[in-house]
Length: 168
Length: 207
View 1 (cartoon, rainbow over the protein chains, first blue to last red):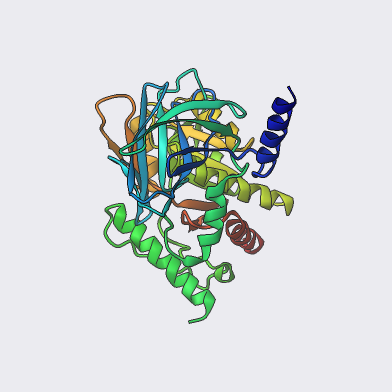
View 2 (cartoon, each protein chain N blue to C red; view 1 turned 60 degrees about the vertical axis):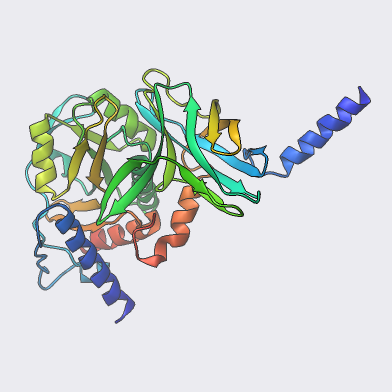
């Protein structure tokens, strides 16, 4: 009983150390940082998912697929050229050893497709499985949040604003 | 070059790139002389962007450009199925509108669908309401939407996927339209809400 309480307190302290709402998952040398998705309109057909993947292992890995309970889940990359944006499905995302790869608005993202009638609601979690070439399957949850809450993409955009080039 | 001149050059270069991307070849951007908006960092005034359109608004009402653009507007062409770029860009536009509102300036955010097949008025209303209470969604028949896109020199291309979950490549610039002037400038994807608000406020002050 006492031990449970201590563990509980430790867990709370651990949570308190993270930014509000942030969460992460680990698998071997991989850390999946704060998987999140933005809430969607009630009649939306698709939503985007984002996260960081840090590889502290000695070997490179690759994110091959993302599975979740939607008719279609794909990994996409937004490519912007001459003011025209196109989204392209990608085969895999390389996660080099020692690197952090960011899935963020305007770049790599997970696309949840076929939401019809099941919109993404802020405050809920989307259970999903990441499939890595070496680390295998990793169960995670995407936290659904309102746009503008801890939106790292916005912060990044703000920082790269003065570069004068189309970011991402 | 002064910062202002380099910014003007950058915007002009982007405008040319957009025009080229739209398959128009080189769009000649006439500098409106003597440009009353010269201080606003634009440089694309007088370009032949914009024109008459008839579309269906998010409430199912038929509307024309004269009605929609009777107030200063930030106009974006996109589609609601787009989960990344369109909500990101339009949340930015909504933020710019809020910044302007805080300065007592009312600007209407407008989202024109280039995916009328899937973007029903209801779906558009849901999408725009989530981004800003005053954002107006417009759709129409494929012909009406194509005509509006042509008038605004935007590019879109449906990427066939064999199912209903296709993607659409599309232009991402946002146009500032003012009553009595029409198109005055545009903002690329990487413009911040603050920069858009500053520039828009300048145009409104000189209009």
